Length: 281
Length: 185
Image (cartoon, rainbow over the protein chains, first blue to last red):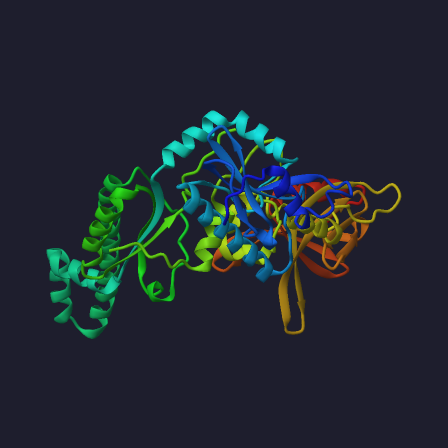
């Protein structure tokens, strides 16, 4: 990354390779990685397919872009597509390092036109973009997934619930056939109690975590998790927008949950605020 | 505990493809929603609902519908001159030959000339019965898996034809009306 004073004209000539075809009359576009609080900046050739990434400033905000054709990036090749997405992610990381928290854009958002079109768009949405940047300033997104092992929790439920422990004791004295039927009944009741307990805990954890975060979003989709969490069940998955100075407190809180028997917490971040960046029309 | 900075590829893909700012303005020619990248990659990271939300499946849906249109022609059955469809209803016909016996599903067409059970795929008539050859008509109650069920029985070429439709009374009435030209026993 290098800062440059040469201006946008030079950057445009550098990106000729990325914008092949512009000269032949195809429409010109700007691929947008993020919007930042910042000024003119040249990131070098770190973009998708090695494109030169630079900023287009308007007042104190700027769009991080590369110059391209006004056509979506498309490929049938999965590895190539994954590569592009990772390059997109890398540019967002670089922009965050350079300017602090950014408004991250989704993959393949392209504005039709040149630098002036982007500047025009920035100026039209200036108030809102500035507000959004302020909202995420000095904050990052963290992802929290809380898992549990069913076995210790079932055992706890069984020993603490007098009705269930009595049923279990009764079963020991029954004949084999009757005992089988009652065992199934007991299993169902234990499962029911465990799921009640889980939703109670999810609420409890959620509200503790919420106190440390500016905003919390519950992930509806079951997240894809690393291998070592596969055999565990999910209690709750959250994305949180957290102030930098609160991350340590949040970490300590998660330690408490993590140390409970049967529970495991996965805490990842900092991410750019993907779940919290909003853009009204 | 400190947050892990080691993210899985899938987690990165999920965020960049499914989250982040998506513009909604005339300036924007493309967003992550339309199938810009391999469907399999998207499928790996997003649920079908998300794909539907973003219009991902539109093309697929379109193709499926076209296929259905071609293969499950909604055009009615071939009719003779002056032949008109009176009733069309889904139903089945009892088929029994050797060790095979089953209800064969299809669409029953009652025209002013024939009673036809039409199968869509592969296309063809499972039964094509000129109305003037129907010798008798009755409604019979049969027990089917412990449930009583009414069916229409026709006598056709000295054999009983067993017919099931959802509205037995209506279909029977319609057949009866259609064959009034020929007296029924």
